[in-house]
Length: 168
Image (tube, rainbow, N blue to C red; front, side, top):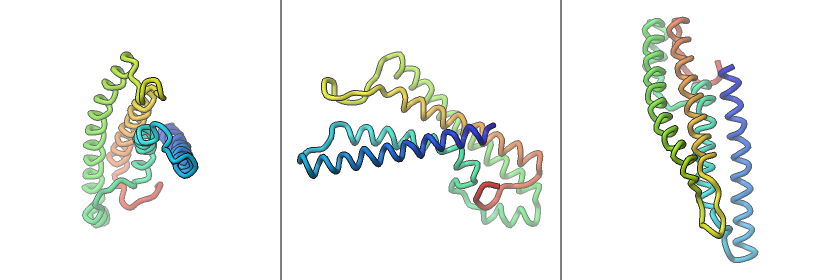
């Protein structure tokens, strides 16, 4: 179920990449044909980029594609697999804790954005609400926290560290 949720968010992230590409291409066409940029392309692009990254985070964690050094853990997994599993679990628990802190801060910000009717853009030209991007941020982080906790549980109960990359 967790993999399904993470992959679903990653699929939405992929669709947002296509939307971002369309916006950038439309802006390039507008610059070349009308001599002017479309309004709010940079603001919308920045907001979409944040959503894209955090919606795909849980799948990135599950695929073991976060930047970390596996040189020590890999050799330790061969000679002392239980110690390597413990270190892997500690790594995942620290990751879950740190992402949970960021998620909580994002949730508080999301609540303010939603209650305050905050918008991104230029009033009278083009505006859009900021809370959907905050919601994507919080959802992505929440599922990523659960993924880290799940991996930690698997390392502790299975006695095996996750080394290397790829969906295992």
